[in-house]
Length: 476
Image 1 (cartoon, rainbow, N blue to C red):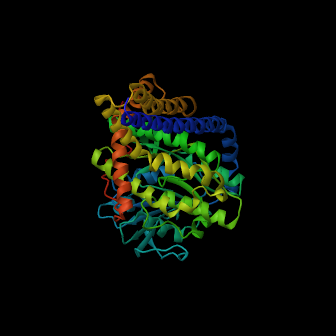
Image 2: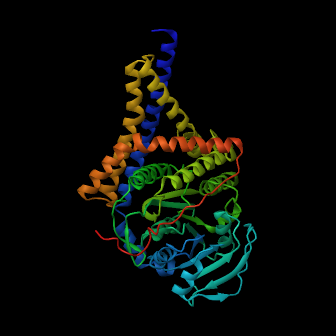
Image 3: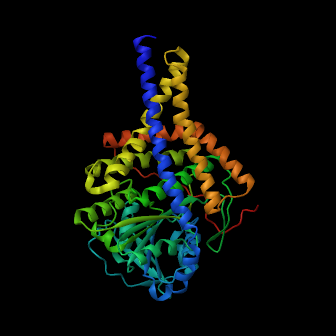
């Protein structure tokens, strides 16, 4: 073996160790998550007691729904909110410069009437001016029309400025909450005043049937692209975020479904308008504010609080989304680099943020590099076959096992996709995902990070809604 061949083999082995460390760490996170989710399954008895006494005790929650050209699903999304099992609720829909029938759908369905402008809280900035405000007769639903600047954050901030609730819940207009999801997130706030934020599981709505705004059946998406995303979401939310939250190291609460103390959000000035990772940016800002002030705080996660959202069904839309996410990751790691390896931030600074850097930011580059070395080594004989096999086992085989474990957890404790056909199809999807789907995501991540490094202007792109959240039953 020449010195060059020896060097390539060593590099391959180092990459194998990198993946081995990742998956050993992932197993640790998975074990923490499994214990947490198992505990949550025993919660329904407590849930019934809290529901019985919730009317006089429950804090007012302001649910904020930014909407831009959402006529296909806005009615179903708002219906799901009006059917939530929660007694103290105000719904704030921000029509952010829609050019379709978004406002007309809401006005006709709920009998909106114009109201006087609200008095805003100036601690949160707003760039696009408010044009008019409307509400239902009972005042539980408000619709704010504003001039769009092309930023979701500005629409959310517009509602934050006039929200009345002690707690604020931010969801996307292409999302639906399961009937008990909000109450599940609110309960920890009632039990522990140190909690500043709470997140729930976000899963693809594609393939799900809804009635009256509520999910009635769990069907797998018909397309492979959506199925790959389902496995990805199960792994990220059910396992990853549950585990990190258990150690107060959660780095992101999805913008599609998150609950915060309103005062915590106001203290950091609301959402950052220029960020492509505004949900992670907001949570890290809240973390930072609490640590800098030296207050005791917690960020929690409940995997059984489910939000259904429409995911991209076309490759081009998915590519745009993932490039945007990766560019946003570059932005937040740069903005909050002071947290990295900072003991003041405890688990967040010493483990969670370094993990984000090593296995979210750097990972796509090493994955592509490892693939090229493996292929070159096999073709030329420059790399030991044993080293290539070890890299394949640690890089692909263990990743598949983690995906399979996520499927098992949802079957045993969440009961979402439990028929034999669904489980077998999900297992097949999990086997194919590292080989067929993930290489594309790595390439898109590299493009997004490169855009961030070049200082390219942030771009949100456009996702055309397919109406996955409609109330029409697609049939068996």
